[in-house]
Image 1 (cartoon, helix red, strand yellow):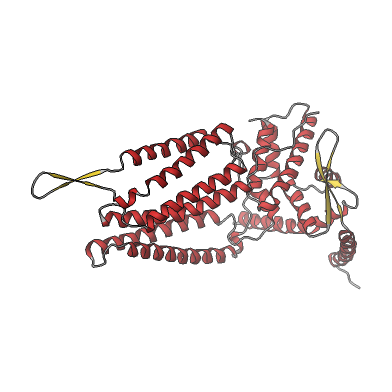
Image 2: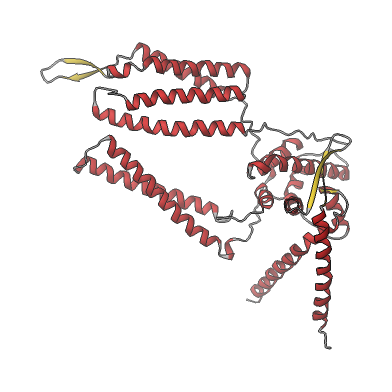
Length: 120
Length: 322
């Protein structure tokens, strides 16, 4: 019985943690696309900063952001004959990133206070 | 299976499940990403990429169905969790419905007072189609509601094996067996109908002895030259394709025109006078011909449209090793 409750709690935690992550993923990706990146280099960058993201999530996300007009992309032939698709923020994306990061800091501030149990 | 082949199969499976306009682009991108990831892994491992290495990498990317779902980013009317059940239910319901209707119709034709006519057969068919559509819509609505129940949406992490990815099919590559059959059968038909068209049937005459009647009606025999032309065209076309080794735009269109011509001839037979000397057989034959015309038309158009969008197998990105 206890085990079941524990498992349920664990499942609920995993679900919530996943949702939290999913929410900030877009912000994380946009933040790294101020300059040009292709799929693999972007994944490397996020990994290096400690944000591991599955390829099956990242690559489709890039296309979705592009179709929403936040990114622009460009196929380029690298030396060695490998074609790569480079992504970068579009002007709309730049503006949106700015706004979203403001929201993020504001929210972080509020949540921080809430978690600390602000007594003022 | 080598690394290249497995990646091809994977991207092909993903692409298959995507809307046509995004298909080639996503496939190309996914292919370059996979090739690059594999190259890095091979560098890290210090050996050539092998089957196990690609398989592990593809598992990391996720099954083709999951990957395609992410790319579509869509909302389902009926999602992948419920869809297999939906398919089973539809199959069972429609089969049961059709069987029941056929049994009732058969019983009425045999024991009741509804005579078997071409009109009654067409009516049966239209009733069957209408009721099948109604049943289908009802089942779709039920499943669409069930889909909205949260427990049914959870993305199922499916266990999948990259080694069991189906091979890439090239729709333009010819299947020699099909082509040869496509030449042999029309040829047999030409010989049969031109040489033995006056098929005879023996009927036991009450006075004793036999009397011979041609089975096919004279009226039908007028169409034999037209049928011969359509079969002849088919043979010429298929021989040409066989010689060229693959289908191309011109032969696909030619094939479509030949099919239209055959269907027109069949339509003339359908709408013309008697086919055989037995009106009962005629009713069934006409019914069969009517269905053949509808199905033939649909399949000819579908084949043509599909071949317009056909991609060649494989991809243009080569896997290069450092």
